[in-house]
Amino acid sequence: MRIGQSIDIHKLVEGRKLILGGVEIPYEKGLLGHSDADALTHAVAEAILGALALGDLGHWFPDTDPKWEGVDSQIILKEVARMMKEKGYHIGNVDSLLMIERPKMAPHIEAMRNNFAKALDCDVSKISVKATRGEGMGFVGRGEGVQASAAVLLEEDK
Image 1 (cartoon, rainbow, N blue to C red):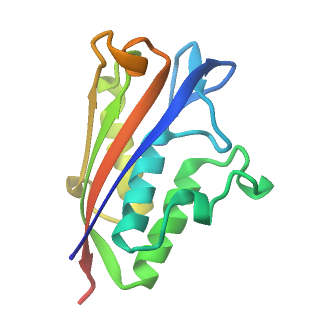
Image 2: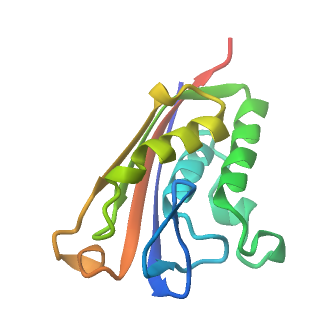
């Protein structure tokens, strides 16, 4: 077994779509970044890379490469899943946490879980997505940005 963890942070700005866990969420602001800036998907993907000791997202999907500009982060996650399988591992479980003041995430959690399960080719029962607020404190609480974290357990294929 191998364990990985990651945190990703993106700024909320006007004029961008809010995409988290591969779900487009109606809101007046979205996340700033080179790709679609899906912080939750980035945290999960990077945690898998960490468990495999393959470095970070910036190494594999640099923001200097026009190929990744505006890309759907689920494509990045699928590529990381391919790397995981190539190394002889599969998902044991994913535990992720999204920190965002608003909008409410509860209506979108199941769709996020299903997106991750599909991209990672595993049962949805192995995927946890949770959300919390900043309670008015810090950049999350002021609605300036989003922070996402993920921990993954990878199991070696038999």
